Amino acid sequence: MSPLLHHHPPNNDSFTNIVSGFNWESSKKKGGWYNFLIKSIPEIAASGITHVWLPPPSHSASSEGYLPGRLYDLDASQYGTQDELKTLIKEFHSIGIQCVADIVINHRTAERQDSDGRWNIFEGGTPDDRLDWDHSCICIDDITKSGDTTTNSGGTGNPDTGADFNGAPDIDHLNTRVQRELSDWMNWLKTEIGFDGWRFDFARGYSPDITKLYMGNTRPDFAVGEIWNPLSYGSDGKPNYDQDGHRRELMEWVKAVGGSATAFDFTTKGILQAALVEGELWRLKDSNGGPPGMIGLMPENAVTFVDNHDTGSTQKRWPFPSDKVMQGYVYILTHPGIPSIFYDHFFDWGLKEEISNLTMIRIRNGIKASSTVRILASDPDLYVAAIDDKIIAKIGTRYDVGNVVPTTFKIATSGNNYAVWEKQ
Image 1 (tube, rainbow, N blue to C red):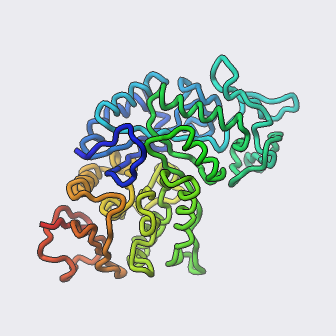
Image 2 (image 1 turned 90 degrees about the vertical axis):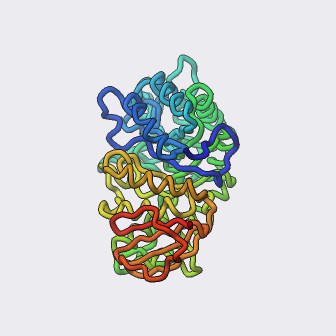
């Protein structure tokens, strides 16, 4: 079993291994997702997982939870009831696994229309007036789109501090009431429900200064932001070799938030899947000889992943090639950064044993977020790297690695187009 993280300030360099505890279809599970997931806790624990990322917990206009309305109303969630969620979290805590809530606060759906027929009257989900907002809490420049229809929600708040979200009114996070009541709600999720940390959904929708404020007000044990911007592409339709600007955007967000937060390493995902799809594994070594993603510059604050409920699952907005998923996991589970495993791959694809072998190798050799990488080969069909000079990972179609791997290393696990060695 891994060293397990309990309630203490963020320390991103201790061993951390995340699993996403849901996919895009989980809200439809008969009998409730919370009641279903609780049965999988022994398997999750046995694989060295330290954190589980759970879906948005509140009432929502969409069953998946990403159009939240009555934030305090957890009984209206399509994933289960408030009591079922508390029972699930308590069970995870009993074996030392922390629970990360999916925090959707960029936008919010209204409970009813105002006198002009605009949807901007919000209900918090309590008998009192907590989170009972009106047009003054919506950004003045907010636009909501549904198909070809564009509507103005009548917002009179400050201009939006980030990217616009078209699916629901964008909330004015410069409003001190919004700041206070959202902070109180998040602290309630910690103290009453039991959550340990946050995954900030659509975090580019508001200024990192706002995220910094919520981080300071709620002091989570762990936090990760979703900053999903497109890679830069060449005229051939492929990602450019140099994605330094992309990863630096992620780094600048982390720095602006204050350093204890992490960001999903979309740069690494994009480069890794392009390299494997195109047979261009030379992409995995940047011009300075290191990893080309965020993990090459700020690994302690980079959460690596192969897919999630947006990029994969049934949405498939940017899916990793299905026949190369295990090579993706070999990379992220042997390299620096904080690896995150997708629910579907672990439970539904028959990859649990292969993935668990990799997590155990990571734990056994003390590979951490800040571990060092020495790239030994980066050819079109072969990538080999030594991590902390304790393990060596190989991906690519070329079977013969020549004399790249020293005789002092012994094979620890292998599969289709991958292998990992441990130092003896």
